[in-house]
Structures are given as C-alpha cells and as structure tokens.
Image 1 (tube, rainbow, N blue to C red):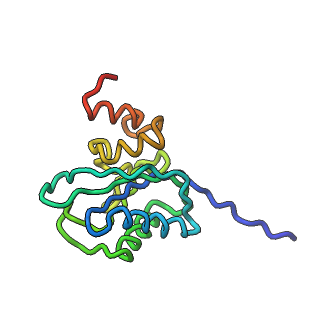
Image 2 (cartoon, one colour; image 1 turned 120 degrees about the vertical axis):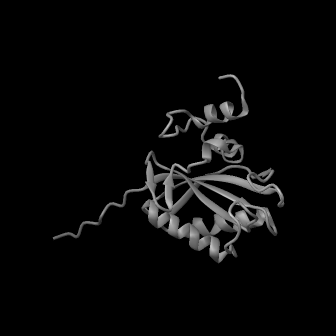
Length: 165
C-alpha cells in the first residue's frame, strides 16, 4: 500500500517589523533572512522600509519599519513563539513597553482569523491606529481587508490620516 503524505495547510500572514537601536535597517533585514530560512514560513512580499517617529514613548530614537506578507503552516501560537525566539536571537532584551528595541516582530494578520487569548491577539490590536504599519501594509496589499472592521487597509490608512474616502 502506498504511503500518503499529509497535506500541510498554509495560511497567509502579515508581519510587522520595527527597529530603533543599532543598525536599524540591517536588524530588519537580518530578521527577514532568519524567517525566510524557516521551512514552515515563506515570505513573498516585503514593503520598503520607512523611517518613523516613535509613538507612545517619544524620547527615543526614530524607528525603521516594514511589513512582510508570507505563508505559514505554523499555528498562531507557534508562529508567535518562533518570532519571539528570533527577536531574542537577534539581541532583543526585555525593557520598557514601547521603548527602544533592536528588533520587534508582530503578527499583524493571520489569514482572516480573529484570536483574543492572553498573550496573543490577532489581528494586532493597534494596527488600525498606526501609520507606520498601515503605510507599508498598503504598499504591498492595499485591498487586504481587516477581518474585524471589514475595511481595506487602504481605507483604514485614509481614515487615520483624515482623508476623504
């Protein structure tokens, strides 16, 4: 009898990257390289890198930010754990919330899944209020819909900027 291989389900994910310590753009590129080497994740599109002012905690260096689209067979929890390991591997240490960091990697969207568990919320709970997320996300996927509001990321960006629809 021929052995059947199990089909692995892959879902589309969007990840946000930020860095404001050291060689900021190189930190992001290093994170992208490490992720792309993972067999359970493949990146397909990466936005350009944008320099942005810090939010929430203003007295810190400017950030570099980008967004990547990819596919994964990891569950949301497995993906989060993997991304946290990458952050640690690249030198991230604990610190002030929203404070300076060598690398930050967030799960922005995981297919159209909505998750609200301790330590894991998808879509990212603040992605709709962050130009530094919506601008690069709009660059690579303007028609992508927020599974909570039903609005496209392009619409969310225009709304955030106070532009007419």
